[in-house]
Image (cartoon, rainbow, N blue to C red; front, side, top):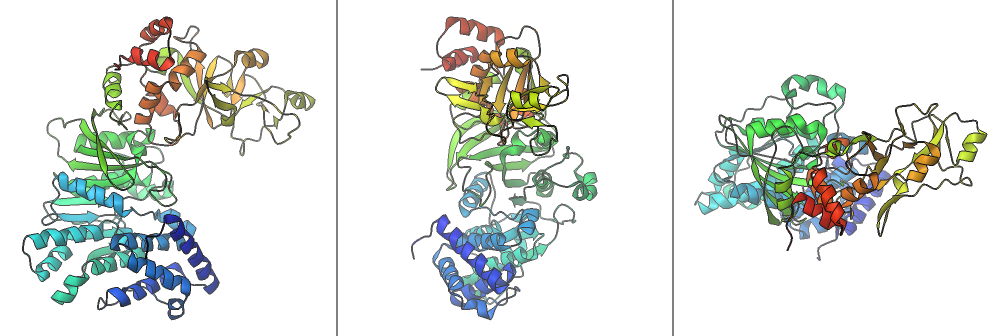
Length: 583
């Protein structure tokens, strides 16, 4: 059977969803049925997996075809797809609450290779996964343990007893725990049959953030792809005391899991993480970054180069990080090795960079040429405030704000609006061959177009009355530019005496009477390749946040003005201002 594409597998799972709805069969019963069929063919004698099964479902052609796919695929790929199928077929609310997104085998392989390079010994160390759903880490670790122990000449029974004792996992979801235990039996099927011993793997239902966990082994490795979602105030209540040192505002649950992994690793223990990149730079991860710099040595950060298609239904940049726990007596090294990781889990070294230990965003190079830029930028102290501009976020939220809006000034006047001002949207900021511009074009014939808004007074805080630059607030690393910046036209400001920003734009408002550069020059500076590259190195999310913009390192404004006077291409001018040498 030829390997299936992801698209064809998704289609198969969608067919299965319709089948389960028609037969009114829950997703855990589907998984139990598939597991029974698969094991009856390829893994006999393992005993019950503990999940419900359906005789009628076993005969359905869609189920038979899905089992055939699992049997013909690589074992770890098959376990990934069965776990993912369960998540995709489960209730959507349950899936989001538990954040059931599983690590592809290629990334697991890359992270485990990296852990081995950093000193993890699969024949010696105890391994623990505090969010083990689907055995994405546990199954491949078991296979590596078996290989390492066999190389030492261990008997079959010794191999099984060692893995039983040295491999641990916890997850909130009972079905995924049952799957994980059975996947481990399947992984070690030859040894179980040969040795006549069925291990009782230590995979249990529980909450790793709340439950007491006894890992008495002196040498241990913690691996985790933690759940990713914002936490509610109710959830945080029982956790605040234990995690107060890293909680800030409304935290993402994966921040708490990172701190818990470090705690569980013990002195000199290793931690391997697959997480979104937002903790590297996000405003509300400042306490976490400070904690990590004080208690761990970041040995390696792998930035996954492909954002789309790595995780099912997740469009997040991904980082693979190796940390070593330390009870710091002396300052720990602040340099970290960085690689770019392909979707296939292949690492390509980029270089080393220094991390600030003040809670500030961590500038992480995405390519070798970023190293020189980050090194030079680390010596500079100039920010947007030094250029005479302050960061603001557009005030108007179109689907919440009840203040009246209009398609044109004429319509606003007809409705006797008191202070109708232009409303600039993200889509009004457009890239051109020569840069970017604000394309504000009211359309009186389109009643659904919101081009003016009446805030009741031109003195409202959301009204911008000074020269400004506007940026698209939502961009991503696969776009040509992260900072899509354009000056607000002088003609617009002269005609209307101000404007209002929709919530999906960022506004850089002139904050002094004589700024270092004009809005037009500032917009060009932000769109330049060096500044765009630096922002990519400090931005781990799709939002262009005020926090990250305020930490954006810029050249000395006096040096920049001198270079501007010499003329030339903007990229060359900015590179010279930064002191970047080119061949």
